[in-house]
Length: 216
Image (cartoon, rainbow, N blue to C red; front, top):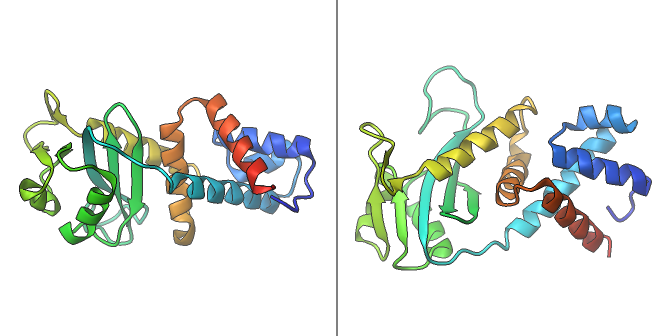
């Protein structure tokens, strides 16, 4: 951002198109700039969002946890263990924010350090029946499971909130027709940030503030 040769007007328009969820190609046409320039500017915005999002902290309360799988081909095995997909772990504080992290696998030894880092002891944690969460039954958390083979919600026992986030994130990413694996984490944090700040005016205000800080 520091050495951008774009005019302030074009930078402002790029920010607005980014907030609206436009692709770099579409934005380049509308702003009348090179597609690579728009793509690079959007990439820098995602890097800024990524850095800011890593400072997110969570407290006690009620949380929903779940993993999901992004990308890969549609043929063959789906869901857990599907080839070519990127596994992601998510924690949603009910009535609050979501936190996501790309993970190598969904085993207990991978998930528990993240859970302990983001959720205070004695908090209530809701999950599905994946065996990776078995260790929560004998942990410092109050653990409740929902068996999706039987029902999707039992009063407060559900993970509908985090599943809603997965749906939103995948819907947003689909418009880009494939995301390079090395940049997936940036797109994921963008989706997390949009979910945590659903008002477009708030998003624009935050991004302008962060861009100005990065230029300071």
